[in-house]
Each structure stands twice: as structure tokens, then as C-alpha cells.
Length: 150
Image 1 (cartoon, rainbow, N blue to C red):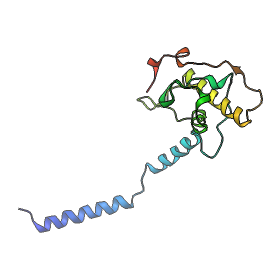
Image 2: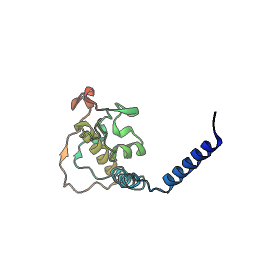
Image 3: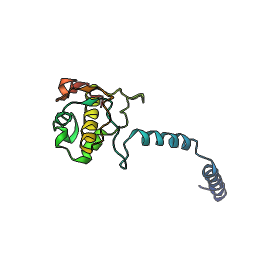
Image 4: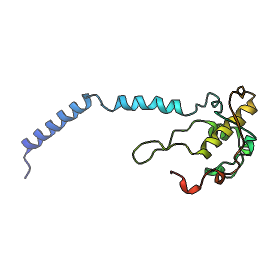
């Protein structure tokens, strides 16, 4: 049924194709390398403090977390590590077309409250160049859980 000459030819062709593919530069590598620094810049690094808040939140410790394992806990009860995570800039969530969802007001308030509390505890809160906003105590005060994009 099978002919040894044909198998040798096929194996020779497959070996040649494999060598060509191995020698060819990967076209997607520069795209991935360019995307990696963008994520590295947008997420908080573990070796530095979180950014200053864009708006200082009054009574930041009373702001409740609106999602995840710390849902309904005030920021003042979180560990330093958890507080720093909420204060960091997280990569945006993407819709089906790959475009980022805009941050919801409750997410912005939580991030600014975490940053305010973190920098207040560290004694590094920047000058009063930012507006003081009242704390939002619950997630439902600013948005419905039905509008969660994920």
C-alpha cells in the first residue's frame, strides 16, 4: 500500500517546511512586545506607592467595596495590601470588540477613596490641588449592579 520512496519524499518535505518555519521571524512578536509595556504602565507596581487621587474623598475609610471578596466592606477594614490594590490603576475591561469600557462613577470613587486613604495613612497626600468630594458609602448610591460590564 505505502511506498517507501513516497514516505521519504513526504518526510523530506515536512522536514524542509519545519526548518523554514523555525528560521522565519515571528511577525506577531513586536506587537506583543509593544503591548506589554502598556499594561506594565497601567497597572500598579509592587515596588512603588499608588498614584495620588484625582479627587480627595472625604471620609475615605467609610467607602464600601462594591465587588469581589471584600464586597460591602469599608476601605478602613482592609489590609494594607488590599487597599493598595484598590488604589492601583487596573487594566480596563474590554468589550467584545476589544474596546475598553469607560470606568463607572462607583469605580472612580472607590479608586480615589482608596488612594486618599492610602496616602493619608502614609502621610503623603498631595497638596489641596484637588477637589474634596463627599464619600459614596454604597455602590447602589451611584449605579446599579445590573449595569456591570463583566
